[in-house]
Length: 152
View 1: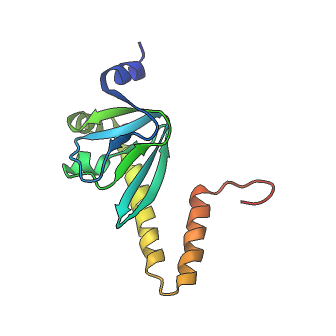
View 2 (view 1 turned 90 degrees about the vertical axis):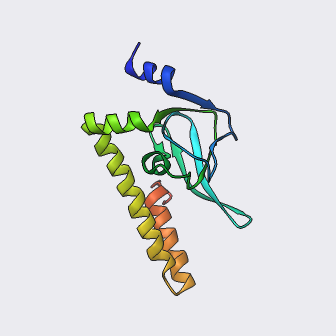
């Protein structure tokens, strides 16, 4: 049995399409790593659901509540049938302390998310609505765009 198989046996959780991994406001002491599938991270603002990101295989989520001991700051639902590895906080702390690669990967993830938040704040601070739209589209292209023979 491989290390991955052992982790899945011990910490694996499966979610059907449309099922919530957790909802905003839930307590949480686990960080999740997507093994298979896709999840949508979203917030409800007023009557609207705002998708913050879609995450795929090998992406982490749930780190804020897990590492700070706070409530979940967003909701996460399975977009497809999904299997995750749910790492308890105490195990995360041991892995960060003992495995440099895990610590570096988590730091890079958090730095990318912080940069994305900073970029969004900069866009939202623009007084001109057209500039906000253009800058938002540029950000979306840089983040999700794929170059093809017909353009991006």
